[in-house]
Length: 239
Ligand SMILES: C[S@@+](CC[C@H](N)C(=O)[O-])C[C@H]1O[C@@H](n2cnc3c(N)ncnc32)[C@H](O)[C@@H]1O
Image 1: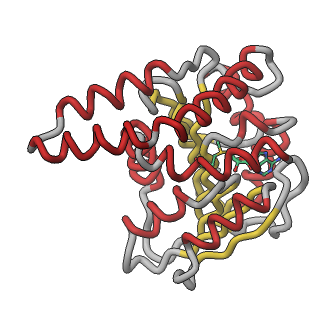
Image 2: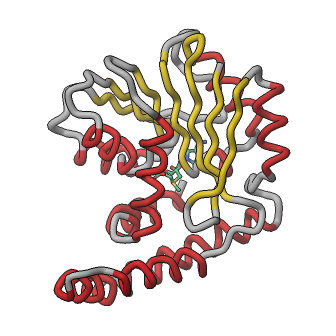
Image 3: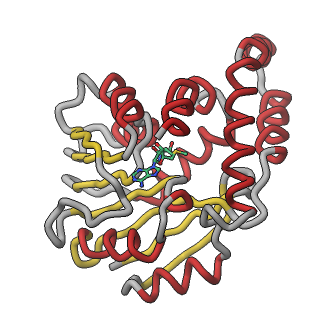
């Protein structure tokens, strides 16, 4: 899986300094709406940025999170990030196959920017439905069919321009400049992802397709809105 291997080296450094991605993490956490003692599955957890955010924002709720990803390096980065957290378990797993969890295991399933890369979104979404407890919720972010990177870069720059006081703005300009080499690699990787999306090899689904697939899998109360500088759908659906 060399593609995700290469991405794993640059992912955290680039995305955690990108304002639209920080906003995406906030949107995912708000949509998750965690209650006390919930058990969460992060499907396609990458290097653990979503897990880190959810744990940080929900301290004291007794949340436990299982993160799975096909890529060993991504899981290794997630391990490093979560090494002091007793309530996080990480495993290598392929979401194109049946999940190794019994029915009704989780209160919530998160799948952020991973569904598009799977062979068959129907299969994964049916598995998410199976492992959710009754009334559990699936929270997903997935690229829109016409997703592009320019909007993310524009929103990042306009957020920096609005920052006050001046030293905060100067700090983020400096960080953005220092990260140019890293961001160029990430932009190149995202161009490949976007190319595969446009060619139909990755699933950049329309709102209608997402709604239909979720309904066919048995989900109800489906809400779909725009997020990530207008480039992703943010989905919440209940079992
Ligand atoms: C763009 S990253 C998203 C990471 C994280 N969810 C986030 O939002 O920051 C996509 C992740 O999907 C994982 N992935 C791709 N295909 C997969 C599969 N078949 N099974 C599990 N994970 C997969 C990749 O290894 C990568 O970590």
